[in-house]
Image (cartoon, rainbow, N blue to C red; front, top):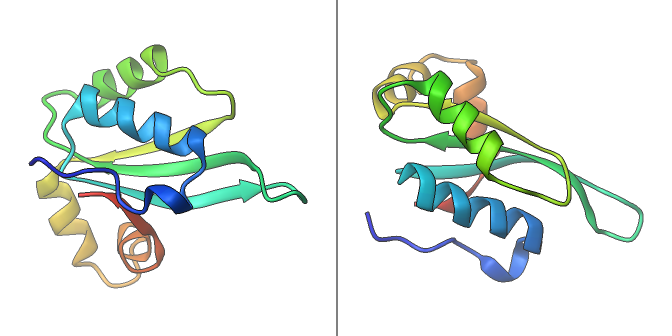
Length: 108
């Protein structure tokens, strides 16, 4: 897939930088922003991303992402393979379905 980070003007520079690194590292199908904490000035203080990507070893991919991506603010990752994502988003009331319906697609 040759997509760009979506809505760059509405993403904080920190989120955009982490998403760009994830694209380079994992070649994801989709990245969702499903939680962002902001301070009173509207600046990001932390965020959570859900990444849907083909990976042979999710645990190793997650470890690699955390070890190689530097961020000025804390972030959390939730990783799914496309097959897992398809299966779990089909389950009513699953957390993945909530991310799919309420999260913001920032890549893919």
